[in-house]
Image 1: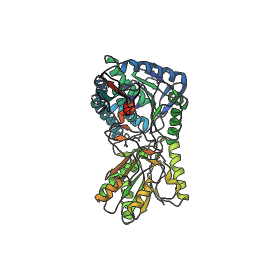
Image 2 (image 1 turned 90 degrees about the vertical axis):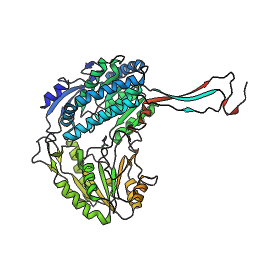
Image 3 (image 1 turned 60 degrees about the horizontal axis):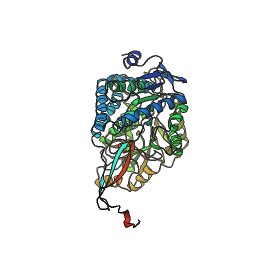
Image 4 (image 1 turned 60 degrees about the vertical axis):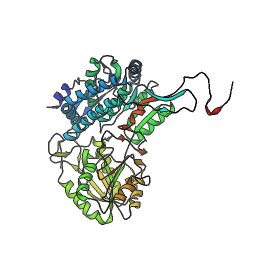
Length: 509
Ligand code: UN1
C-alpha cells in the first residue's frame, strides 16, 4: 500500500483536522502543521491544529461527557474497551503501516506497538470488574469503614513521537474503564496516527449504547495548545510522556493549580554484565535494547556497565553483531534499523558524539548512512562509546543509538555507576549468580522503576506498572494498580447504630 492509500483507509482527510470532539471534526484555529515521513522526508499530509480557545472547547465537551459516563457501570464501560480491542485487531496491519510511515519504525516494532494497544484493552476490560476498594475494621461499634473508587474526570494526555499510539492507549483504555473521557494532544511530529486511533475508537463509541460522543477528544497543536490543556480546570489529571524539560514545565503548571500529574519522562538506562553472565543471551538483549527503534525508546539501553574480565569479548561480539544489521527503509523486510525522526535528532547524536570524544571516549560506529537508504531521511550507524563513567556526557539522554560502555571490578561499584545519573527509568543485570541478581533487585540495588534480570531494558510488557524515579518523573502507567491514578478514592464511614461514638474515644456532647 502506498502512503495515501494507508491514510485514506484510516479515514484521514486532506488536510487533516486539528480539533476532534467525538464525531465533530474541525480544522482548528491554530497554525497548520505539515507532516513529513522520516523515511524519506516526503509530505504525508498537512493537518490543522487547535488554538487555546479550541482546546478549552474540547475540554469542556469532555467534562460534559464525563457527567454521564461516570454513571455507567464499570463492566459496561469495559465492554466498550473490549470492542475497541477488537477493532484494533482488525486494523493491526494498517495502523502499524501508518506508525511506520509517520514514526519510521520497522514493521515488526510498529505492529508490536499496536499489539501493546490490544493487550492493554484486554487488561483494562478485565480490570473493569476489579476496581476494588478495601473494607477496614472500624474502631467504633456499629460502624462500617470502607473505601470506594470513583471516576476522576477527563484525563489530559500528552504523548511523544516515539510511541505515537501505544502510550495513548495505555492511558485511554484505563481512563475509559475508570469512567474518564480523554483529551489527547499527540506529538506535533505524529498527529496522523492520533487521528487514525480516534477514528477507530469513534467507530465503537458511535454504536455503543450510553456512550457520550465526546469520550474521545483530540487537540493537535504546539506548545500553546499544550499549555491550554495543562491549565484546563476540567482536567483533574494530566498524563504526560516526553522529555524531562517538557515534564518539568508540565508538572509545575499542573502543581500550580493543584492538579495531579502522571509523568513518564526521559530515561538513561543501564545494563550490568557480570562475569557469570551468559554472553549469548546478553549480546541479543543488548543489541535490541541499544539499537532497536534506532535508539528512540525511552527504555533504550544507553549505558553498558561490564565487568573488566568480560568487557573485551563482549564489546567485540556486539560490534560484529551490529555490523551485520541492515539499516534503511523500515518497510523492507530485512531492515532492523530505520531512520531517526528528523534532522534535529541526527544533529543531537553528532553533538553528543563530539562531546564524548572531547571527554576521552573511544567511538566505534556512528555517523550518517547515505548509501542504500532513501534520500531525504536521517539514517545513522549505531555508536558504541568506551568512556569513563565520570564523563559528563553520560549523564544526559540523547535520543539516538549511542551506547556508552564503562567497566567495573566490584558489583557495588557497578550499581553505584548505574544509579549515579539523574534519571531512573529502566535497568537490567545479566548474571547467573542468584545473589548478584537479588542484590540488584534489592533496596540497595537499582533505583529505577524497572529492574530486570537477564533481559534487556526495553520492551516492557503492559501487565507491569511502567515508569520511573527521579527525573523520570515518578509516574506509573499501564499495568498493575496504575488504574488508581485515574480514579478518586472516597473513604466512607457508615453508622448503623443508635449512638454517635467519637473516634479516639473523644467525649463531647
Ligand atoms: C516509551 O519509549 O515511551 O518498554 C515507552 C518499552 C515499551 C514502551 C516504551 N513497551 O520499550
